[in-house]
Image (cartoon, rainbow, N blue to C red; front, side):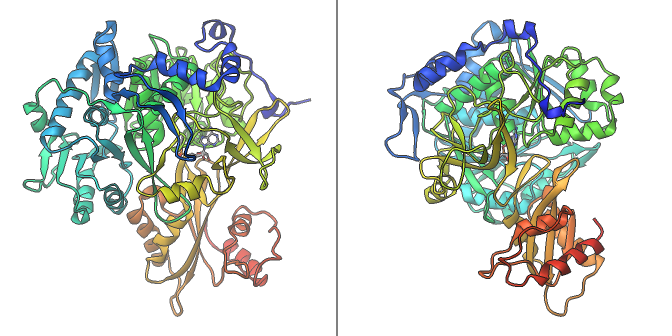
Length: 640
Ligand code: WTA
């Protein structure tokens, strides 16, 4: 009899278990005294300039404070304390670009770069409390810029380089940033991509920006605005090489990161300094089991939370070696990733299910060309990982031995929340297993009762939690705390199995997960409605073999407008211009009607049934039940 993949159990490798950073007592310790557990980690993992008074201040929920009145600096923790130790000559950042530029920075060298750029930022007017927007490729200068911001006490707001100029403009304006850091461009499939041109367009309408720092990276022609734009290498050449790190309060803002929500306007998720540095390090130390000689590679872009927490802050704070690659995964060949993993001797590798499915589609012959035997631990993040991809990942990248850490978390949680521990947890393909020690989660129904299948909630505050939505405390409360009162609602559904493991099943709100990237249906709909021929639009995610979900739009055209391939193309292009190529709809279905309730709410669930070829569910609440039959025909007629 064959066993379903999701019922297989993989016990921790004995050698890993006996040397693991986390031993089984960790759960008992955290359960016995949750705040004491975090207190111990905060003392062990962070160098404080001044000690904190309280581990947690929960007097004004949901505005929680951690490590109150503690003083620290993140760049000091990520750089100075290692540069001043035996780690001075240890490599902090390893970097390779698509076209083969290589950089290796030791902690000692990184220290100098960060200090100089911090001084350069001060010189151009950045002060403690300011917001600085970064729109950068995955280059070492991006890491330096992030750390330099934290050194002078400015909050960074990183906008993913794949976002459009309009998306960039909106995020600059929301944060009221006074400085933008960018690059002339980067390379995609060997061709320069004009980042600075997007910047120039965005800055036509961003009155708060006073200065733009440009890193010379691609070497392409760029236009400079006199008095506003400066080259990174010019300001660095003049900068002094020591900058006193600001003493930041544990609750001072560390960064803003915009993420999609259920309305058209992205939310600026606010993270603060102390708790974030504690939980990112703790999770990295125990889940990725980081050791002195590890070469760690997380493939996320710094434009996403994974890039913040697990490419930069956690690995550097722990004094590890972090590898950054700026480029496409199949350039020049489909073995690019494995070629680099072998050349750099990568030991811990962290990526997303969508990437794994892509590699799977290309075939095992690409990783097989390379010696990946040093990889001892794997990670997965971004969406539920299907058991087939999990098995392929283990066999072909993990040499059939490396445990896979399926880490569930969000931009809002800042760090891992549900995850196995590599020396302790028996793994099953497709589940993130248990809450991290010191984290309390539950699965509940509409009424808040604990159930086996339902909504995933977090029951008590955690150190790296978001503190608010930038400039909008009400939205923070409404979005995350209103539905279940004292519990944080994550927006995901989940179920529990007989071992008590948690299986996250995906979003239950109007948020799509395309290739591990979050997109709001409302954002895409409002972009479509801007096309003058469009009367109404409803966007859903339909299952996609590689991307997880594909963007599928149902569109009603205005009276008298005829459908044409040019019009479909125009709509797709507009979404890409408005938000970014990642949001470009895969299918656009022109329809005369949309399924709506009598109160006018679009029933996206029914649209999903159509797009995924299922029998259409309950339609009794529809204002006009005939709509569904028409829509089904339309969908069948549309190419997708
Ligand atoms: C999904 C990424 C299942 C989930 C760190 C969550 C996952 C959203 C997993 C957050 C996982 C992330 N298993 N689902 N291991 N990891 N998700 O903010 O729906 O970009 O709410 O943060 O991704 O996406 P975000």
